[in-house]
Structures are given as C-alpha cells and as structure tokens.
Length: 341
Image (tube, rainbow, N blue to C red; front, top):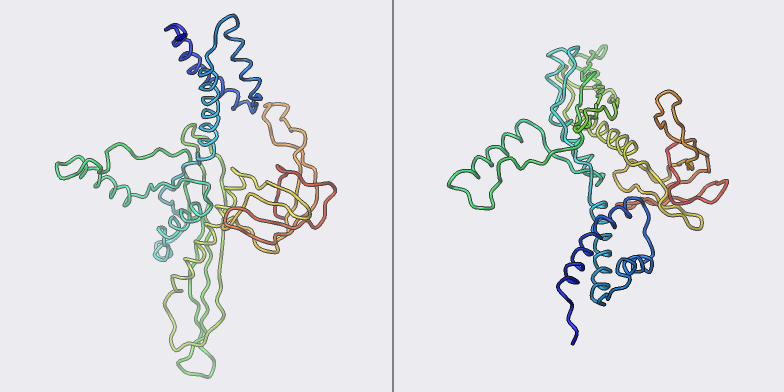
C-alpha cells in the first residue's frame, strides 16, 4: 500500500495553516468563493503531484471552520462601555445637590444599556472598583483558592461615558388655602438636564455629546402642613427617562435602525423591547444613495437618502419589531434605513 512521504505531510500541514489568513481576508472583504472554486484553487497548487483525498477533506473542513469562527466572533463582539462618576455643574447650589442621587443616574444608565443587549457594560464606580480590588487582594493571599479573582484582569473598555448634571430643580411649593386654617395647597416639581460625553478610549476621540432632559409636576393637593421635599420616586422616574433617551440615541448612532426583512405588507426591524419603539408608532423608511464627501477634508459625511415610505409598528418582540407598510414608493429591501418621524 502506498504511503504518503514525509515531504507530502509537511506540505499538507503548510497548506492547512496557510489557508487560515486567506479565508479571513476573503471573509473580511465580503467575498466568499464557491466551494468548487476553493477546491480547484487548492488543486492548482499541486499540479503535477499527488494529492491525497484526506488533504482535500481536511482543507474543506478548515475553510468551513475558519469562516464559522470568524462569523461567530463578529456576532459575539459587542462594544465594551463603562460609565464614569457623574460630574455636577458648579452652578448647582449645595442645598440643591442634597436631593441629587448620582448613583441612581448611573444605575439607570447601566440598566438601560444592558437592556439593549448591544453592549457589554462594566463598572467604573469607586465603591465597586474598591470591592473588586479587595477581592483581588484576597486572591493573592494564602486564604484563596485557585479560582479566586486575579489581579490585573479587569477588562478594558472601548467607550467611556462621562455624565454631567447641567441643571437640576427639585422643589415643593405650598400655599395657605384662603379662609381655611391649617390647610395648604401643595405642588411638587422638578427638572433634570444631563449631558453625556462619549469618548473612544483607544484614540481619545469624542464620539458624541448627548443632551438629555426630563421634568415632572404633580397636581395640586390639599395637605395639613407645608415644607419638605418631593418624594425620591419622582427623581427615579426622571433618571430612568434620561437613561432610556440616551440608550436610544447611542444605539441610533452606533447601530442604525434598519429593515432586516421585508415581505408582503410587513417589514422586520432590528429593534426589540427596550429599543424605544412603541406599538402604533409611525416610522419613515429611507434608502442610502450616493456618498457625500467634504471637498476640503475628504471626510465621508454620510450618504444622500431617498424617502421610500412609511411603516407602523404592530408588534414588538424581545429582539426585533414587526411593522405594517402604510405607504411606499417602491418595495422595501433589507438594509433600508428606518427613522422615527
């Protein structure tokens, strides 16, 4: 029985290894050659020589695994973000700051970003970092097992979010009710304005600055005494609203809302629950056209867009949304851009 020479084994190994960067480059370029073409290309490398069937099979499997691995990594990779300690404007008085709950703002921002399922959220709060450091110090002691937290293994993040409270009002107004002793008409009000700066940790580039605001005002109530402050629940609601606004705007900046499928009178959108959409909401659909380039800096400013029509949200699923086509100038296609009115 014929046996493969040692030289052929070496060639086989070199072939298998060399295919990996080739496949990765092909994948990155967005070009997947037909399997027959790949196998034919392999055969050309060994014209005039003998190729074992096992080499072809193994090469085929390697190409498949390489493409699968690259695809899996691309799907799993998410931007890593962390929220720094909020900054408070010097314009806010110390009395006003007593009602400010910075930890609630950070907590709501972290929750809103996690709920989008598009980010890996890491802590950068002093108290939590201190707790992690304590655990790592324990890991380096003689009391820890081998699976304890290790020093120097905190993940780096790609985006840093720096919130700044620019404006804050949180007060209670009470006035005596005419002709009724010991009775007061009370009303609570508040307003919160937060600016969040997004920084790229690799380059220091400012990726965006988002201004967000929310307010509340209660109905007047007749009470027996005046004084005090509004309940904390009202601040929590403002913080939650601002966090939701920010998450939606950041997603729109990094992951534009697009059509992922169209069929019949319906389209499917890459937004799910906690994506800011509401049932019955109307959305406009556009198609990207020619790139717009700044003649001085040669920077790509975006693309000219063609308005295609309008859709209406009919069902919101955990990871995608279904909308009904209200009007369209031409059939919608996967990749068309979707925006709120």
